Length: 119
Image (cartoon, rainbow, N blue to C red; front, side):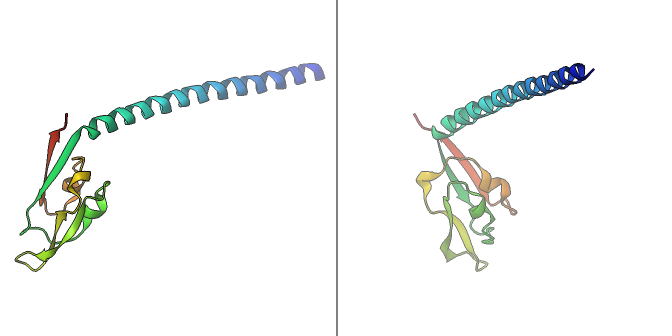
């Protein structure tokens, strides 16, 4: 009777360990695939040069695009538009990857993103 309980507990423990190993393998495989896809995306983005055009008169200088830019490309201009706002501009144009985060988040749709393939 006690031997059966010990054997039963051992089987449960072995089953849990086997299940855990399988889950880890599955999760590791998923992470590995995700890592490869991310690297492929970054390789593609590295071959694209981006540039933006800001509708200066519509921009109200809210700085949302500046904080959304993952490459720190944007800054506010020292100049002001007709409404008296400092508008967004490309402070570091060479860093732009054309991801369009700035254009997507702009509340006034003042930004148009252009992408050019770099050979």
